[in-house]
Length: 242
Length: 142
Image: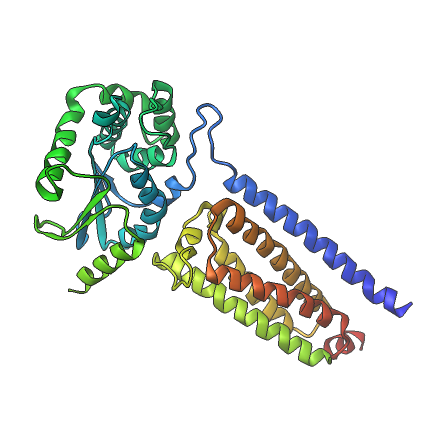
């Protein structure tokens, strides 16, 4: 009898706890949910959250006065560039968020000439057009998140529209798409190609990276390939200490 | 085991949990990566699952563990019941977060897994504490 009277409140507590946990889990699912847009099936994952609160201007991500600048040369179709964007960049973003590092995106087209397609060109153009609205990084990371087989012609009008729409209301998607088809984006594309051939290699491969002191043109460290995270953190930490 | 020892055990485990959650809360607001023994801490910390309606999950964990500690300091059966319920809620939510790490993020955060182990130990101890009779129950009875 005494045992039953002691178990009753315990059962009530366990039941209450289960109800609370279910409520929290449901709230979490509603809060985070699957962030795939049904209209265009573009996976957004946690890109918006990763970039939220970090200043963007043109091709730049991070505080303009950051001590170091990381220049990223990549092709939106290149699988290792995608791997770097999905796996390494999220682990470097704290340097950017804390104002120590800024990153420049330099999209270079190395795959279209080999496949005879136009996917890289179309995606780089869209990224640069979004850069005119200071949303280049959202587009670039969405392109990597939704990367498909190179040379397959996946960068269709619908795909590009889906990417632009997935950025959210901060980007005028229609304007970005139309500007991407004009010569307004060419200066940045040509500048990226020129920088890659002068600072990386005559025939640059992707991804390649330069680490420099902000405001300086001297390359402190060149990294070619999607090397392990530690190659980046060691170089950045060493330069920050100097 | 006596009610007093069980209460101390609940307090100690909740303080360990609060320490871990406090550290994760600190790194969250500081913006830096937590010291990590796997390659998943920052990925998990920066994932969309690290917040619930904009509130860092680590902060919610810290408040939960501190509430459990408070429940052990208040000598009243209701405080005991509340502490035990919070321990069970922490266990359930931590199990959910472990599932998210395994199936949604694909990475494990050392600190988060440590916290999940603490909650796994804390829940049965809190239930045993709830079932034990001691000062608080006698105080309520008098």
